[in-house]
Length: 309
Image (cartoon, rainbow, N blue to C red; front, side, top):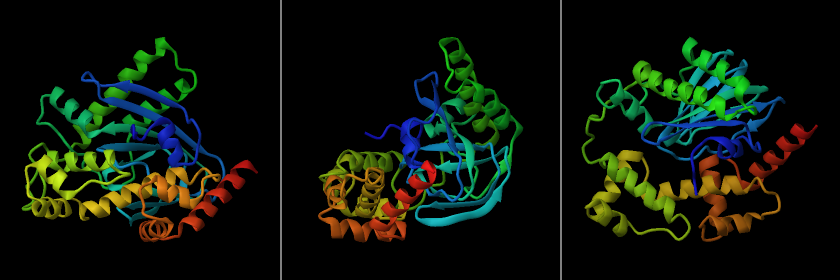
């Protein structure tokens, strides 16, 4: 089951095993985490999807990158360079994927929108539900940088005594992001015909839970108190894709994780992720990723050979 883009789950997106991670939680028990990601060779290539989640990744770049290419929702949104000590923010609802050309060293702070909302209420503000930062924005922030630099020596040497410091820093960063970069409140502009936020969360959660066997429009519509037609129209208005397209995209995300194992055939991956057959899997994969599954797997194998060299 998907558990959030941090630790080993985030490591798989970068084809890394067991990256260092520190955990905390808010007063209401919402998970916070920071993962250290380090890649020492050049020309690493594309990441795998980081998971579709109602959360942000606040990325602190510890090392300069001459090329930073980012895709969200299957479209290129950024192609630039960035300096060490700068930050950018990934919205995990937008299925971010990145291209890594230079050696990199970054800290990824996992921050659910629920935690940001909780922090804004504790500040005495209207409940914030978004960060007002676009994916193509890369900016210096001394507070984020200082928190990251303080946490760096604790990775791989965390103790119970240091957990209190980790809690203060991660919870403090969440509060800082809500107060400094908070965007829309819990009363966003209503888009005519779109699903309510709770309906969209309900539908996507139902599809995640039934990703292999699938789920009917009627079941999801009943859970949202809508007709099947209203559910289908509202979901597309909210997400830009039909429920079926969203489900196929999520199956591709799962397939990308399985493709890291060279002993699992593409036919097995197609079956284990709910596609009708390998041909169907190949068509959908190529449409989303812009390259056939076999070519993607070959790129993964090349990356591992470079890493081992």
